Length: 252
View 1 (spheres, rainbow, N blue to C red):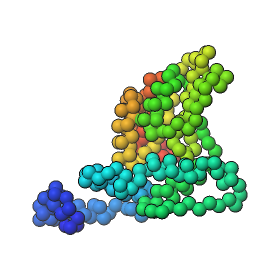
View 2: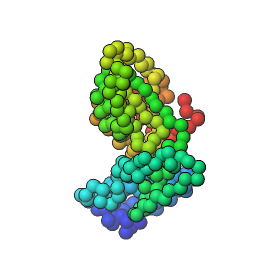
View 3: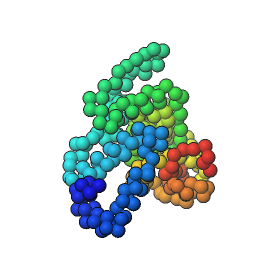
View 4: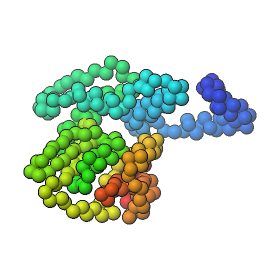
């Protein structure tokens, strides 16, 4: 513990006083009592924590971005490209493909590969929404929620539309506008899309990105959503809740 603290000037300064008052041991005990068993903290989550620590210390040392580990978004894109065009083949009984991760640092390529294959084999959900400004909605949801453009169409029976979502996920949004007869928008305060983000640092980061993308934070109609989350509204009145918790059937 002493050697670890000595690598950071602020920690090395604080360490002796804490040790003299027997507080350093108590602090160490707090960390030792955290349950990090795979049953409590999934391997994927532990890998993401590890990546976060690497990235944080790399940035503090002015290291080049991505020098120590590939960003998770880049890994998702790489895996998506690897599987592109193979959906029908992989859906056949007995189909097998090997996915080789040449580095296997945090197992990101392997875990994301498994996620994307499972997502492709289950039913897919599309959330279709008419919007008043197609380009604006696409830009806001991609910038704020980290979505990618999955597909577009123009003048399809008088409709323009764009599909956005996370690559490989089992759900995506479709935003549309009708050229001839614009649909009157009528969302209510309880028409919500809720994203569960149990890791606090990821939740806080996503909240910041949503605000930067021009979503407006609002008070939820249902008080439950303010206990562990924040509610945001886009210019059309559609609401998104970012919940700092894991999904559970015991939710309110």
